[in-house]
Amino acid sequence: MSNAQVLDLVDLRPYRPRLDEHFPVYRDLVDHLAAFDDTHLHPDDPTSHVLAACAGYAYAETASTLLDPDLPRGINAVSAAMTRLGLPGCRCRIIAEQVDAMLIRSTAFVVQSADARVVIVAYRGTEPSDLINWGTDLDVHSRERTRVRLAGTAVDDLHAGFHRNVRATAFEVLRTLRRAMAGRSIYDTDGDGDGDGDASLRAGAAGTTRAGGAGRRRGASARPPALYLTGHSLGGAMAVILGLRIMADPVYAELRRALRAVYTFGQPMIGGDGTAAAYAAVVDPAPIARFVYRQDPVPHLPPATVGRYRHIGREWRYGGGWTDTTGRPVGQMLSTLGFAGALAAFPLGQVRPLGRLFPYTISDHFPHYYIDALAAAGVCEFGDDELSAGPDGRRRPPR
Figure 1 (cartoon, rainbow, N blue to C red):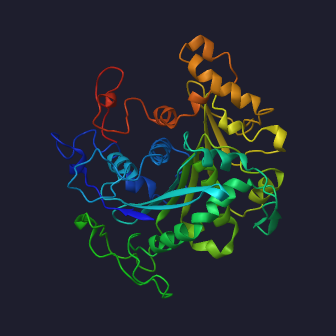
Figure 2: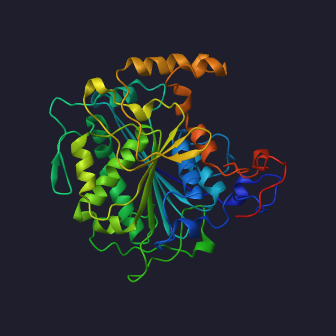
């Protein structure tokens, strides 16, 4: 478990002004994410783009070698991405657990805005070169069926490998969120375990330092921070499982009040009819928004040969534009042969007509395709890149 220090906009702007009309990407991002009025419906375009980027960069190594070597160790790609997008001075706590023999590879990034009004939990997905991660995905049924209680119902069809990975780091993720709900810095362990959580944030938001200080402690009558859960692939499945636990268990009432939505990208199915029924039984559930890009095979997993699985939440599918397909969500592929075909389609897919002959292609699962497809015209998550110019070559107006 490690912490990253904070980045300011100036750290990411060599040779350029700290601020201009297109950097950071979303100038009022904290206010947008922290909105609590009922008219703020999910999903929305900026939030989808920001959380897709957060989920995508969660695959990066925890320490960046591209930044100034004089910066404190621990700066990571998630911190840099969120700073560019509009959360300068954000704190990022990295929580990881690895137990190879039990197929556990669990990594969560907890991001907290400088003023502590927004908190994002992004789970890392399946790493392509990691056989343990692939084993997690394949470990659908443990020898002893996974049984959890959701909304008062015992559920035994939750994906065992996904659930095990969530449990491995849940205690530390929840401890970190408890600090955030109290308005404390997620780096501040003072007061943990003493029952009162009175340690306060040590400096004003305008005075955020690289050591991770932050604004004042939230007052008892203030609104809780806005909490978002996200992830790509396996990370999306883990985000949904944590979200279900928060929504369904009264002990997490504080987190449920803070939870704005769960956004996932290229997420596999997490359970069957029992899991879906448990979600349907949740009173006032937080929105679950699932995004599926073109012929991405992963949302069609697990295959039907391992049992009946289905998606929960609302679905948006991309085929040149995003369409609400909640009424006809993607279904299971018939067998693992479909996934083998998706792998074969990758090299052939470089010749466009050939790639579209396959029902699935693994290249459509890449997180950067989701990020690009969810960005508004003329918007790039790097902010100052030439891709930030619109099709007519003009910079987009400030947002």
